[in-house]
Image 1 (cartoon, rainbow, N blue to C red):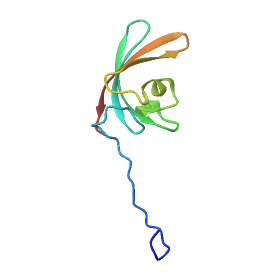
Image 2 (tube, rainbow, N blue to C red):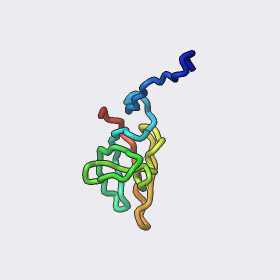
Image 3 (tube, helix red, strand yellow):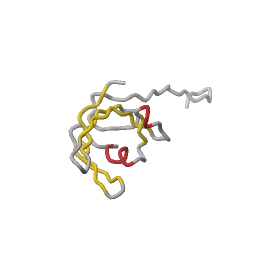
Image 4 (cartoon, rainbow, N blue to C red):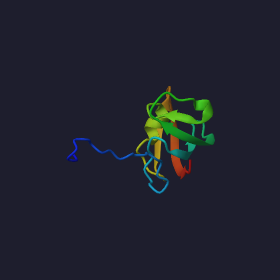
Length: 97
C-alpha cells in the first residue's frame, strides 16, 4: 500500500480471447450438433454464466450444451443428453464478438 494509506487499483476488463482455444464465459463459438437421428445443425452461440435467452443465441454454462463445451477446446468433440437421447457436439471455432 502507498505511504498515503490509499490503495491503488488497476481497472481490469475481461474479454473473449479469440486466440485462445479454450471455451470460456463470454466466448461466441460455432458448434455442430448431431442428434440421435443423425440430423445435423450448426449453431453460433455465446456462453454466459447466468440465465440466458436461447432464442438470442445465448447459452448458460449450466445448461446441458453449456456444460458440454465449457472449458473444452476448439476441435474437441463432446456430447450431452436430452431426455434419453444423446447429442454429439463438435466445437468448430471461436467467433469474434
